[in-house]
Length: 68
Ligand SMILES: [Zn+2]
Image (cartoon, rainbow, N blue to C red; front, side):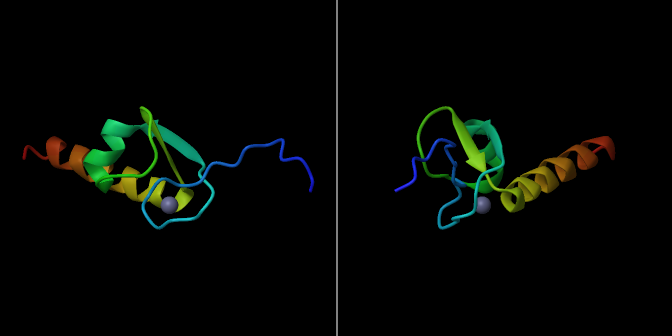
C-alpha cells in the first residue's frame, strides 16, 4: 500500500465522486446547489459543480444589473 500523502478531496455534491478542485463557504454553495454532503463551514466542489455554482451566481448578478 503506497502511503497517501496528498489528500484528495471529493466533491461534496450528493452522488458526485469527482475530485474537488474548489472550496467554498458552505452557506453560499448551498444557496445555489441545495444541501451538500460533508461537514464544516466549507464545502468542496469539483470543476463541474463549481461551474454550475458560478453560472448560477453570475446569472443572479446579471439580473441585478438589469434592474430586476
Ligand atoms: Zn461534483
